[in-house]
Length: 423
Image (cartoon, rainbow, N blue to C red; front, side):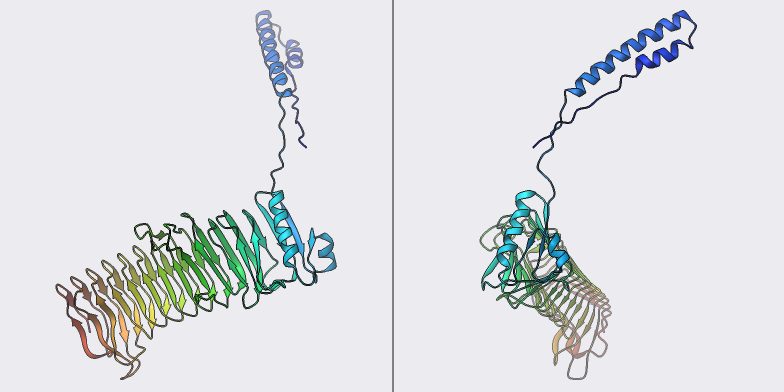
């Protein structure tokens, strides 16, 4: 139902002329003022007539908030809720509430009150409509139990989930082809998605993820190998992931990889892989296992802790600085024009090859001011710097491997390399 809104405009000029005419004694000035007020009054009348014929109709488009309560939500909460879930089989009412948000708004919110929502179907998939957000009262207050997935609509636009706990060995968040996803402050098994949109963005912040899908990663955002889709400007920040992370843009369009991804201040308890991503920022993370970068160029990897190898394969124009490598090495394979500086390394195996190891076809890299140390006489490196055949025109200067090497300070099987001031 629309309501027309009428305007009334006050015509004040006749009254003002009467007040002024009592003060003005000059006949010429009086006539001029009278003519001017007549013109202004007529214009005001025309404006009033124009505005009175306008009507502005309200629309049904609005922001909608639907409140959902659990069976064990307080009585007051249930009384104020739009929907109340039963003690079991909550997935049906849950989906109805989501659909109601979408039906009443293009940008709505499903607010989950405190309580436990128990999903009983073994293969439940809850579909989050486009532009609908789901928010609980915090991971310790709002909990969804069962084996299920919260999924964005395939090829959808925006999904936002925050402040709740998905409890169950197979409870996870899955987004395939959603253009923008933000998951914040969620306790869940894992978060995953396939990229089918050329502008997909994934933000995962402040989550605790203790499970993993069959692929083995707590955060698994993987580009489809049979299309040219990619993702960009994504943020992975402040998460705990018990089984590591895999970020992979499309492998079918290597000329246009993903870009602008920031990975910061996370704790990854297992192997991490980053593939086909340029212009990345990877800073302040705790990698409790190895970290591998493949086909990632023009990126910064800095101030991370890596308990294993930091591997760089087919990467160009990287800056790798300020990292602590405990129990591993920095390994370059087919990586060029990169700067490896001011990192600290501690050996983790008996006679490991080199603290900084240029394994194959890595050229024109600047390797400087790194520090490497042995753990013992048997847990050490063979070399501070090891340059294999086919690695040419690199510069390795003033790297400190005092007492860390078993064979020699450096080995150089390439051509045109400059090694100065290393020990």
